[in-house]
Length: 264
Length: 80
Image (cartoon, rainbow over all chains, first blue to last red):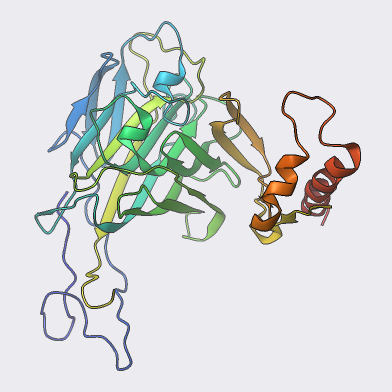
């Protein structure tokens, strides 16, 4: 998804509005733009061939799975040291510039889910992670280094979506207020996965619940970073039947790299 | 006698946590996250009181320091 630069609203010059006297500067009402389409410009890494198909319509992704006979923490993004769950990824480029692990980036993630029992939440207890990462084709959680937004669902029941954040191989989420949308922000990089926070929102954009979580993983120097969307099972014992569907979701992201030259 | 502190403003509202225990066991629990702060200059004193191979260490009196701090945070969170 292209990243729109901020322009000075008066002059049209790139780089955003001129800072106010005395310093500072900000962006107001920055649009998220079109929803992300994982079927266009993203690469799927699925080491155990769990994804049968993905479709995209009206911003929503629908994913159909192959059979998983035995559940394992290998397929739960928020558990265990190894992660073999499927994930889509693309290079993290801002204004056509590849971001590396030496830089610090702010990622703002937004997700909307279809919380209808079974038809929206899917046929099994599942999860979606929307994150920045260091190595999307690794199966070692700390090498992948994913930090960002996380949502889990049960196919039926009163609680709808548990929204929150993923930090490498652990997560904090909440279903308080039965949210169907959430915004999360991660500050990632500087050779570390950083931290993430979230606010779950109602239909008016007001808070239902919030939270945060710290990552504790260093990442290698000078490696290219990626954005990724990982799907998995909600608990380590969850199994999947052939042609089961998972949560229908719509995702947005906006990312920024501040210029640290002159302020360090 | 060493002390601990509870970072009470950081005590979470009810949330679901997927993570790993100190022994490497994965867990998925809905509960309250209570942050315990061990003063850096008391770390050695605390570790001297603790023998992981002994089920009776630390002593009851020392154990209560941590237990009561955590339970008081839980009590105030659940019944403010």
